[in-house]
Amino acid sequence: MEYTLAGGPEIVAIPGPSVMPDRVLSAMHRAMPDIYAGALTKVIDEVWEQLPSIARTSGRVFVPIGNGHAAWEMALSNTLSRGDHVLMLDCGRFTAIWAEMAEFNGLKVELLFAEEGRAFSADALEERLRADVDHEIAAVLTVHVDTATSVRQDIPAFRRAIDASGHPALFMVDCIASMGCEAFEMDEWGVDVTISASQKGMMCPPGLGLVWANAKAMRAHETANLKTRYWDWTYRSEDGPYYLRFCGTPPVSHLFGLHEALAMIAEEGLEARWARHEHLASGVRAAVDAWSTPGGIDFVAHDAHERSHSVTTISTGSIDAVELQRIALQQMGVTLGLGIGSDESASFRIGHMGHVNAPMVLGVVGVVEAALHAMGAPVGSSGVAAAARVLGHTT
Ligand SMILES: *Cc1c(COP(=O)(O)O)cnc(C)c1O
Image 1 (tube, protein in one colour):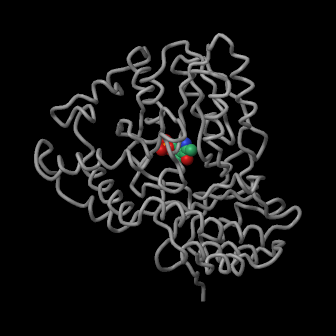
Image 2 (tube, helix red, strand yellow):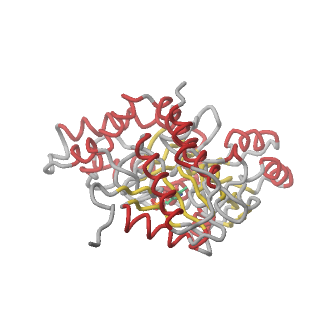
Image 3 (cartoon, helix red, strand yellow):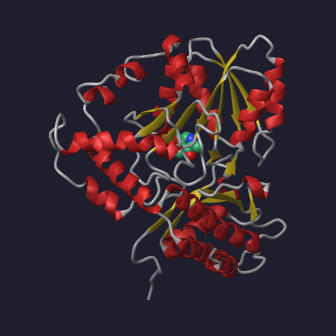
């Protein structure tokens, strides 16, 4: 008799969109309300009150209807002018994609790459900014966590480099893969614009961008000439009818979902969330360490201190990652993330962001291990046992 072990709930372990809590789903499941008064207006006010604390800022927040790319465009168009020189630091893939947008939109892009599998060097940033004696660089743009390599960058070190060089550039950070998962302190770390989206650590469906701006960014906004009406922060800032915050009809269902997600974050506590993500990620990393062999399983992020707590990218060496994913999905009902890069068969990704707990991580790690055995792949030792030891160790 033919059968598989994939019955029951499907587990999607890709690095976004991430698992949505039932509470968020239920909150969204409602008829369209009045958009000018009542429950929705209260939800909007509360969301606006709570969002700054998620990025740890006393700055403003803007919520474009759109995905992370929309949030990228909102950040660029509101703070920069045609022909401005922007310095973009890539440690994987995502800053380079953002750079394509910046260039298309009329900015002069200088894109610098980190060493493979590493964060960009803060010393190299300082050196580049010191060489810019005329302060032609208007902004430094980068990511907190790159979702392709799962490298996390040291944002405070970048701020220290900018300050040490005495450079006035704006500092913008994409936290799409890390917000709500990794420690991030927008004000304390001196980030001027922070960018995120609803569908990763924020536990909502894709469809909302999140953009936080401090006073320096709002000053840049006054003279920016890349502004267009739809994205314009000034237009969206006005008090009055609620449609102005969204430049049209509010994204009603998403707002009810985000409101519930923010309630869940408040109940857990942001710092407890950061700690949970770190602990769960160390379970995944213990498994990868245990599986690793020369020429086989390994981390894409070379430096242990630069490995993200929300996603882990695993290189597979001689093991066919596409076949591994096929077995995990078809035989065991787990969707793993594809590797991003030139060769899909050379890596895969495990998302552990947002609504994730120990049994989910142990389940996914167990399924990867089972698939490795099914393929007869070289495996150092049991990743499941290693992850269980780490997760069982409470503080
Ligand atoms: C997912 C992601 C994006 C792109 O977000 P979209 O919602 O797909 O536009 C950008 N940057 C990072 C770091 C991401 O993880």
